Amino acid sequence: MGVAESEFDADVRDTLLRIYFSLGAEGIERASQFVASDNPITAEKYLDTTMLPEKLPDWLSEEDLAYYVSRYEKDGFRGIINWYRCLDIYWDRTAHLAGKKITQPTLFIAGKNDPITYMVRKAINRLPEMVEDLRGIEYFDDCGHWISCEQTEMLNERLLRFLKEVD
Image (tube, rainbow, N blue to C red):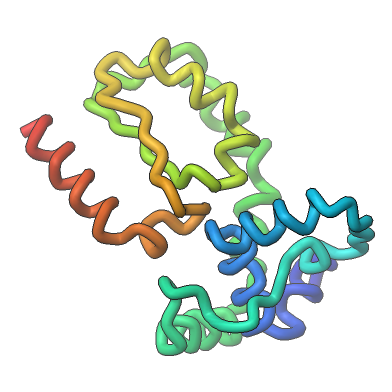
């Protein structure tokens, strides 16, 4: 078992709760307030960079969390961790797509507070030149990384409107 698996698998419920909360809008907001207060953060492990919430986020039920915990307790985190470990391999395997444009109608939606959008900002900015039929780039307020959970109704309404546009 690798270092990451050992850390994540040690307490599956704690790991999931920390990751879900910390990448959600409320967790991002709390983290920005903490960092802004100039308190030093010394992280030895990934989970040291996350926060354990006092209560579940509104968008995460105890029933859903229990289900996710049961699945990760059964199989562990190795599968998802390996996905990230293989990012360079994915680029190698799709080298033949370099410079190709996406021709399908496309709508990019993300949470306004999703930290991943900052990591891939250059790629998002290039969407108009790489996507021939880009219908929009939209960011939902009060939303972090878990857009389908944090803003379910808004996302479904927007996706249905998009599907009608391209029908």
